[in-house]
Length: 206
Image: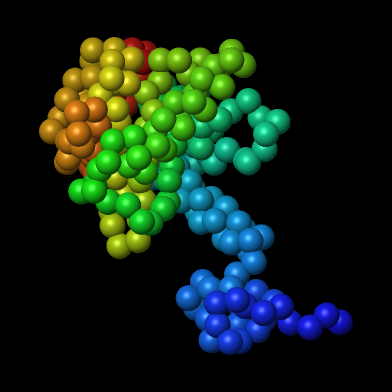
């Protein structure tokens, strides 16, 4: 049996983390960090999917997290039934990350801006496979510890929506970031969107 691997961050040793660093995230192996990150992302996606179903009255299972498989043509974080996609004509991207805020914005270096750009690129890849996502704005859901979920849109991306849908998004956002992004409280946004748009879809106008 091989000897315990030195932690490198303190005087202790251990395979994943030493006693001295336990609970601080120090000394974790790269694979352990990766597993934790994927689990954190999956939990966030399931949470948002459930919020969207509850707000709209959609049946359970109408919105599911997209399995992380490169063989799938879907690139959005959530897979929607046809009915769910009619209710939510968006390309959802979900980020559960720390180390950023709404007050330290440095152009494209601002993490949410980078995540939005990445989602636009993912949408373009999915479009290459012939799926109808070209008209769907990126819906970037932002989660952090001790903070209510937020949702961010780029103003120029919202031009993809029909005028009636843009009217709903014309409600006062919680925050405007720079000249191109608007941010809403996610729960409030879903409630306001569904109050207006779900009846339209069910009348056959979606």
